[in-house]
Amino acid sequence: MRFLRRALTGLFLMALTVGLLAMAGQTIRGALEARWADTGTPQPQRERVFSAEVMTVTVGTETPVLTAFGEVRSRRVLELRAPAEGNVIDLAPGFEEGGSVSAGQVLLRIDPSEAQSARDTAGADLRDAENELTEAVAAVALSRDDLAAAATQAELRQRAFARQVDLLDRGVGSAAAVETAELAAAAAGQAVLSRRQALAQAEARLAQARTALDRRRIALEEAERMLARTVLRAEFDGILSEVDVVAGRLVNRNEMIARLIDPEALEVAFRISAAQYAQLLGAGGVLSEAPVRVVLDTFGLDLSAEAVLTRESGSVEAGQSGRLLFARIDTARGLRAGDFVRVEVQEPPVQGVARLPASALGSDGQVLVLGEDNRLEAVAVDLVRRQGDAVLVRAADLDGREVVLARTPVLGAGIRVNPVRPEAADTTSEPETIALDPERRARLIAYVESNRMIPAEARARMLDQLRQDTVPAQMVARLESRMGS
Image (cartoon, rainbow, N blue to C red; front, side, top):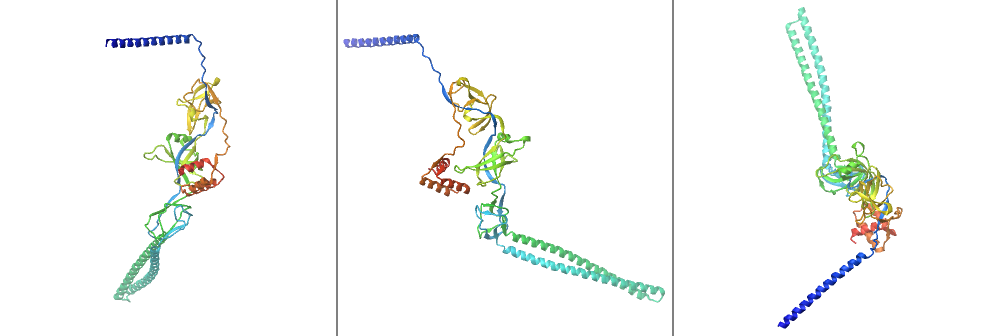
């Protein structure tokens, strides 16, 4: 046991000694290498040069375009309501959803039997009133003649009374004769009064007959209007929508059966922020009649129309913000009421600005320009507008200088770069087109023909392009993305 313990102690001491010697050797070697490095010749370091795409800035006048989204509406919309109550006995051939009608065209007829009977009854009552008026006129004439005769008789009786009084004064008459003549004259006067009362009654009857005749005429006109209401006509040329009536149906008066829309009198309503609204105000704070472009995305074949900014909403609705503007569409080719469209409004021109890619402007409001020896310089600019992937900026000394198109974390002021100047894109080049195999072409044509959401004019143009030898690649990509292929 003593021998084993001593042997293990010796091995431990030997291992510890070897470890200390190795550590000392490593320390000496590190010190020698550091010394050799200090006494050696330093190697020159090369400056790193990065490549950066640049473009020459041109300061001038730019026309900003304000982009928003809105809905197409019709300025002339008429609710077609049943003018009378009854059964629908006749419908126009085009009285259906999407049917075109012309001004004055008969759209539907309601059973006119009851209205016809009421009109005939009113006509008969009118003839009775006319007969009553004729009788009243004759009665007035007879009463006037009777009054004239009674007045003549009363005059004769009065002269006879005067003659008897004269005879009595001369002593050749009698008091009884005078009294008899006086009574006769009084009776004749009473007869005249009675005839006058009869004439007044006849004239009152005449007035009542005329009033009754006027009432009968009004009743006849009302009955004719009710009869005319059994026929519904179109007020203007338009297209029917929301049709909810069939032949034979019983409709109630004032029941809505369809809506008539004028497809030529369209406008677009869109909402913008208060800041954007302020940019459209002209002199005196009045909204300017700026030109507007309305675009409807239809699977790569966009439908566009020109419009003019006309007015703004008079109030801000509850829960809304900004301003609601309206633009009148001049030529509504392919657009329909209810379309969700993109609206591009041309703002007043801005002078002394430059158009740059949005990636050229840093978060600090600076752009990097190419200086001497291809070193970058930071120039502060004022942001005027954002235009999609571009910005309009203003700076005093930016005209004619080259600006870095895309800023990266490795680029900054003082960095030397290798400028890359891309060639100007050929704006006259044709859009990219591809050739389709028969199976793919047939599948796309079948999809376009079966999709009723595409307007008829746009569908016709798309089918015409799909039947060509080469088809725009953008349209094919959009169609296939909606087909799920």
